[in-house]
Image (cartoon, rainbow, N blue to C red; front, top):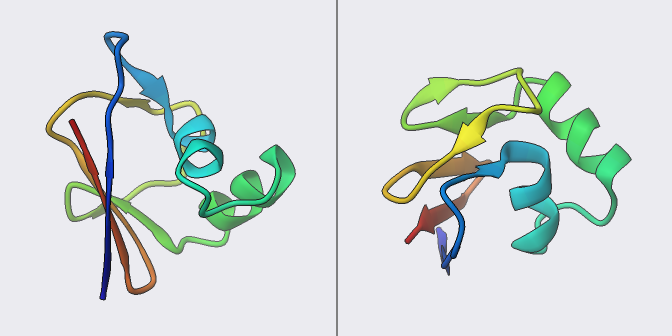
Length: 70
């Protein structure tokens, strides 16, 4: 399992933007497809909202990759 730590300086970042920022998705369209395909979990729950607000402390899981937002 790969762990990635991502620091944000704003109150939140949208889920699709986070996937691009963390290097998990190559483009915004790729991030959208990943979310709609049902392979993205936020804090242990399946998330299909690409505009979901991700805040510090959230944990995003895609396949065997975990992103910790700090």
